[in-house]
Amino acid sequence: MARSTRESIVTAAAELMRRKGYAGVSMKDLAEAAGAPIGSLYHHFRGGKVQIAREALANAGLAYGLLIPTVVDGYTDLGAAIDGVFTQAAHDMADTGFANMCPVASVAGEVADTVEELRSATCDVFTAWIDGGAAYFASRGLDEPLARQVTTALIAGLEGAFLLARAMRDVAPLLATGATMAPQYRGIALAPRTGTRVAVDAR
Amino acid sequence: MARSTRESIVTAAAELMRRKGYAGVSMKDLAEAAGAPIGSLYHHFRGGKVQIAREALANAGLAYGLLIPTVVDGYTDLGAAIDGVFTQAAHDMADTGFANMCPVASVAGEVADTVEELRSATCDVFTAWIDGGAAYFASRGLDEPLARQVTTALIAGLEGAFLLARAMRDVAPLLATGATMAPQYRGIALAPRTGTRVAVDAR
DNA sequence: GTCTATAACATGATAGAC
DNA sequence: GTCTATCATGTTATAGAC
Image 1 (cartoon, rainbow over the protein chains, first blue to last red):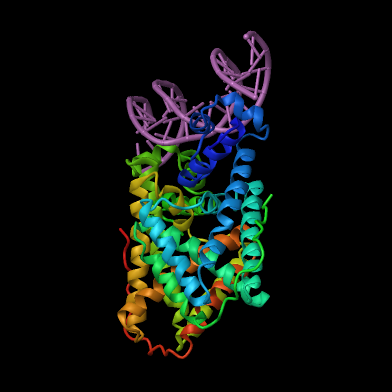
Image 2 (cartoon, rainbow over the protein chains, first blue to last red):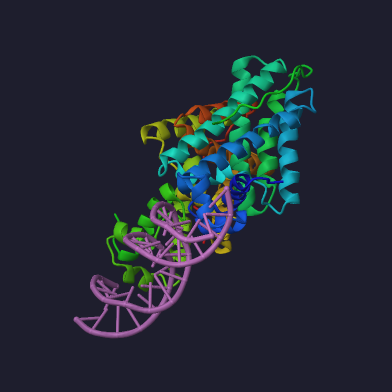
């Protein structure tokens, strides 16, 4: 999967930071997980640990940004789609032993007040998710303000519910959040999907 | 405020972990912030850093558990109350320079897969918040399943929106989440408050 | 209960041979 | 581009004087 050394470092960083946060991952951890010596890490990333984290976040942001549109593609009603997003998330999380969470959320809370360069990286990812989701819902016929509001709330609700679900090892928070957000939007139709989705790059 | 040394250690831990997470705070940081030498930390907490974090989380959990009921006390309609919770949170966050967040969320994502003793501490706090909030809403006339669902979703939505708001330095996620959750519950009356609220201890 | 000194090891980062 | 050795500092935790 990971061809170049550079790639495997970024991949390893995303995977480790997803589980242990930013401060909890050491350069030695990264080197071991990437199968490369420490020197290689600094050769490819002269900015050191912060730069590796930056690229891992941007990279993971791209992958996870397509998650909501991909699930919503299967629905023609907004309320059902919202329900579907949370139900799907609950299944994924239970299947993966409550570990399925992207590194962005794990790191965002930790660095928001401490490492400005990484706060802005998480900000860019969230912004790209919201812009991309809003554009997607608009392409399905919602007007822009609603599309943006629903996308923002969906992401916030998902991240918060993931946090509770992981801590409690229980999918109830995901189901409760979906059940609270979805019903209001039952009956709002989603137009057939048109065109090709474009990932919004966070970098 | 903090009388005993023990107390000031726990207080300092909560404040530091709120901003820097668990791994990002060192024993030296704690000693300096508490105004006590390292030796005192181990005298009062033989379990070391983990035990300090455990007590700080449980302690902060107690304080923040009353937040939702306190705000909701001012409302007689469930939809308006939910809106009020998020609007209030948005004001608080803007007033504090986007730093107002409890340590529980900051730490929860970091330790869920790494420090079982702290995962269970965050689990206990979330459980206490949900139990306490459900009991509160039930005392205001909602039937138990709805009370529990709304409380769970409210906490998940708040934590997720806080995360985005801090990273983006923008209250929009709080307002969008409130606007998405509240309307469905407009018209559901909250009965007058009866009796005294009891904090549910997380320990 | 307070505080200093220190053990034993991990940390991010660098230099430089290959 | 790969890898080893190493620096200076920081890490959790302990021992033991006061």
